[in-house]
Structure formats: C-alpha cells, structure tokens
Image (spheres, rainbow, N blue to C red):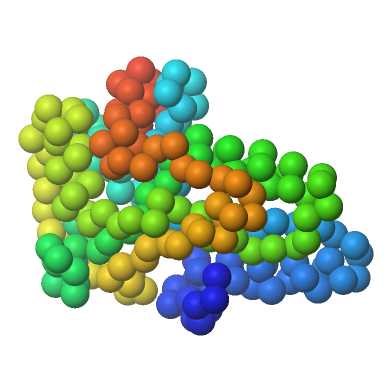
Length: 198
C-alpha cells in the first residue's frame, strides 16, 4: 500500500482513478469504504457452481484449461525474455473464495465503525506463466500445446502483493495458497460446465 502508484497500462490507471475518487466522494457525501486491491482472481468455488468465464477469455488459467480441453488450439504465451527466473511474467493468484471472504470481513469491519482504507489482497507469492502451465498439466494430466509470442505492451515482469495490512485490518487470511489448489478448482468447474451451460 505504501508503494508508489504508477500504473503502466489503462487497466491499472482506471483502478487508480476510482481509488482517488473514493476519498473525495467520502468527504462530500459521507461514503465509507474499503478498497480491496486484489491481484489475479482465479479458481472456482469447490462445488463448481460458479466459475470463471469471459467472452473473450483473457485470463491465463482458463486459457490453459481451455487448451487442455481442446476448446482452443493452443495456449499462447506472450514474452519469454522478462527478468524473471524462467523469462515469463510472474503474478500473484488469489482464489475467488478468498476474495469473497475478504468482502464479508470488509463489510463487518465497516459495520463496526472501521475507517476508510485501501488494502492489497493476494497470496504474497508469485507464480510465473510457465509455472501455471506446469500446474495445469499436472492437474489435467494433459500435454497442453503452447506457442510463444512477443511481449504485450504494458505487461510488468512481476506483480506480487503484500497482504499484511489486509490481514491485520480485517483478520483475513487466504485459504487457497497453493497454485495447484487454485487450478484444481478451476479445472473441476471447467469439466463440469461447457460455455453453452453458462
């Protein structure tokens, strides 16, 4: 939360704009808020009733699982020359159930009179694109076809959160911290549903 806020792409800039508006709105209209800065939302609920599906799909884990299921020809990886251990981007993945739990805790915090606050929320550990691919292969037991393309503009090499303030303020702690756990729930949902079901 104390890091310099300098987004490198429109996605990040729009989030920052909203976060800058919240205190102004709070001052003018008495709004009380908790801004949860969650990192890469992933996974599905363990009963596979709700899961991740976008049109078009842009998130790494569902893209890898779609390739495993033959819904797409291959998984395209953008860039393999980043300053990371294996040359691919590193991201902090947080399970959707952990995000839901944080929202409930945030509502309770505000109900108890908690002050307006912005909080990072993630696992506090990063996984590279290739690590996600390997996890998807382990979970599915399928050799996933891959191609490498050029870097995408605005993709930082590594984004990992510190959630210490979120833990201290809300009493929050992620339950799903292992990548294979997160991918497993997404895979269960993907197998149970086709996009036509959704």
